[in-house]
Length: 201
Image 1 (cartoon, one colour):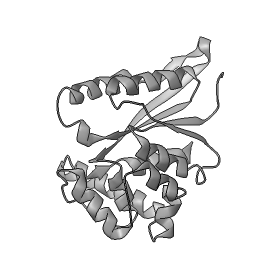
Image 2 (cartoon, one colour; image 1 turned 180 degrees about the horizontal axis):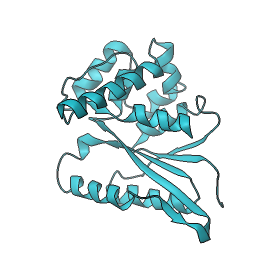
Image 3 (tube, one colour; image 1 turned 90 degrees about the vertical axis):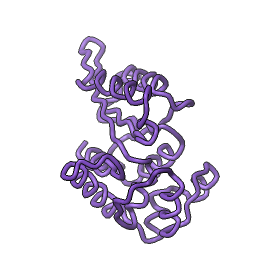
């Protein structure tokens, strides 16, 4: 497809991220956002998707990572290796390729960022269920493709129900500030930083 100018490929690990970032295309009209996800959520599959995106000429590839699956070995080491592999931009001038690959982490999972649309929390979640329960106290949410389709866009669905992207970004950034200050390794999201990156492109 040749070199695309300022296009972002967003790679999530599953349909949640795909549907959410698809719903943000209306917010970032200046940018071609193509969400995608591997059929199997392994680091190897993610790496293949990144390589595919580089070859297709994307200028930015943003990987959305759920840290609850990276807590243990061998996933942790494989993930660190993948990050190291793409630490520097991919620059192949002869092929007209220049691509920055960045990773944005959330612990436990992307749903924390959805909760941040409504309120802040730093409570530890040992599993997804209590987090989904907290989210459901703010807005009805089901982690199913049927539900994602029914909302006609997760982002606008959250905003129609009293949430706000600005609030989500502020809460996510606050979680990162606290993470740095207190050294905590749970309940944080870098997706606020990603939204900032999308705005700056």
